[in-house]
Length: 521
Image: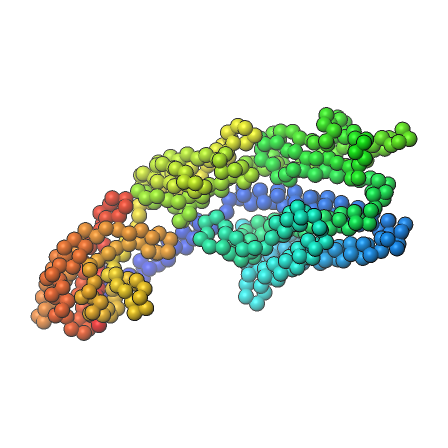
């Protein structure tokens, strides 16, 4: 009897293993549309890095020119600026080498960062950044910490210091769907597709150059190089956001460095002058893709002459996206509350709403609770966000609805260390603990679902010296007196079975659970 209950056939074991592998593959599946989105973001960030790099080069060139004119005053500041550039270039190069290492791990020695074949590879980033022995993630974190502390020491403005610390923060944080904070490198690169890891590193390079630019600007201001900046006017495009959803507004400030506040310049984009003297360029986007624009700034001088300073920039428009994930796992269970996380990047939680088919979806603070009603019928969640004052559907996600799995029956007891434990059969169990146990309990406790069930009743089956079975019926979930009397007669090494265990879960379905073999110690 025990053999037929406890042991599985080789065929059943293989079926179970195939089911686990299939579930993992479904959980790890990454949409090709999302991967294409990362490619677009990577391209946009790369262009932005180039623009910021040219801006930093221009600031450094101004400091060099000033030093040539006034070596006594400019040399100390140029030395600090050179050190800033050296440290920034070193860290930037380190990040470049890590991108190459990740792509090479995924695509082989011929892998190219700009043409990734295995974009959805979820292992390569973790192998390079987190594998013992290599541990490149920790090395990068330490390098970023050192660079951040060095740069903030050169920027006395507290607001800019806070902005740099936030941009280059490596503090542990909690990813959606996790229960505790993770190290910076683990949260960034564990289970990340190769294309996402490369994009994150490119974003880090953008932050490195941003911090470098702030330090160089502060050093240039420290030598009172206003005349140099006026003599070498440069136009800059400063967008409020480099990523824009379709249907939302794109805003960018177009300014001239060291402009005279008594003489506002005229700004032209695409041959048309901007109506605002603040240099605010904004419009509503209508289609997705990468777009470039250019123009020039006209500056009137005191002698009546006018000079033109050209500029150019680009922006990327993406489809609106939302993240919808089941907190417990990638399916929903009928009859119980399923915690959900729903958010839309760039939209506050108050501007996000969602509906669900085959059940109800309710908000609890910043979290959502999905409660499907029918097993076997998919549940579709539709997310709507308020963008620029009007509602817009940003995503739909479909989940499979399944019945709760059967729980496991057990005897609850307190161990020698005072901690609560559960005896589930199949190994020796103390007779003292058995005689003091109140009865049988049942629950799902697989570290993903933690759900208690109500035990309605059960039987114990004992065997006399002739091998005859002696069944005894419980009092609900508790051992009856006749069952306890049988416990006292058991000697070391004897065994009995708890069978016909009936239990009911929060979904209201009554089930008969697998028997439990108890071996008396």
